[in-house]
Image (tube, rainbow, N blue to C red):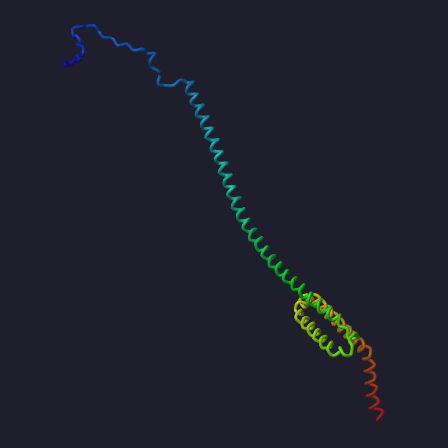
Amino acid sequence: MSSLAFAPPKLDDSDDQDVLIQFDESTFEPAIPSEEDFEDQVREAQEQLAQLRQREEQLERQKRELEELHQRKAAFIETRGTIHDDLARAISSLDREADECQRRADQCLNTREALDHYLRTIESLRPDNWSRAQLKEELGKAQSRLDEAEEELRSASPLLVSIRGGKTRKATKRTSDSASESDQGFLYWFKSGLAFTLPAMIFLAVFGMFFLIFGGS
């Protein structure tokens, strides 16, 4: 297989004809943009800058809103914790008070039933209706019922004292006030009587001394 060699054309140095290369000026654009294109670019840059500023303002608003929400959330959590603890303590106190009231109410009801039982039992004891033959036996039974009732009263005494505590304190205060008024009244009349009788007593004492001195002579 034979190879083909490309040989560049040879220029004939003897040919004195000039070789002219011509270019089409319409194929080249000017390097400096026109005034209209520059104004468009400036306007586009200004619009982009305005959009960036709007975006920045939007981001700042979102940042402030997030900070405010964070503060409100923290305040809410703190207030919720405080109210939660207060409610829990209040409910616990009410539960204890309710249990205590229920226990006390049950104790009062049970004590009342027991005392009412003995009250009806004692009311049913009628010695006048017992015959002479029954008197000894019935008196023994009746005395046992009285002893039981008295024992039940002693058992109920702390509860009754706690119930009557307020009334007892009020009665004690009224008694103290009355005693104080009585003491003041006694002192007043004692002083008044002493003031009335003191001149007469002095006169009698002077008269007695005068009589002893001059009468004896």
